[in-house]
Image: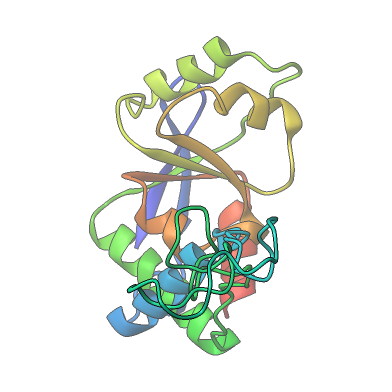
Length: 208
C-alpha cells in the first residue's frame, strides 16, 4: 500500500510512502488485540483502594454488654463489623492489576491494530511538524489543514517534543505519542493515525 505525504499546510507533496505488508497488511488476530488492550487498561489502575478491617478500627476494646441474659446476640467489641462504624469484612486491599502478556502477542496485537487502521484508510503521513514554542492554536491550525480537527487523532512523532506535546494536551480527542511508545489501545482509540517524518519506519523496525 502506497500513501501520499502531506505538509503542514494540508497540501500533498511529491513523496509517497510504501507501507510494509508484514506490519500493515497481516491477517488480524482479534484475540491478541483483546489481551493487549485488557493488559493496558488494567495497568492504568492505581490499585490503592483500602478499607479498614476490625483490627484497624480505632475504638474501645471493652466488652460492650454482658455475655448472657440480654436476649440478644453476644457482642464483645464495638469494632464488630455488624455495628455501625465497625470494620469492613473482606474489604478491598491495595494490590497491582498488572497482567502479563508475551512480547510476541503484544507485537501481533499492534500489527493487527495497524492493519485494521490501514484497511479503514485511517493512516496519514506528515513530512514534518516542528514547533519552537508550545502554542495550541498553531497545532490546531495544522489539524484543520489536514481536515482532522473534528476527529479523534493520534500523532506519532519520531522523537520526544515537549512543545508539540504541550500544544496538544489541551485539545480533547487529540493525543501525541512517540513511535517507541505506540500501543494497541491508542491505535484503536483514534479515527486518524498520523505519522510524522520517519516515525513509521521506527514502528516497522520495532514490530518486525
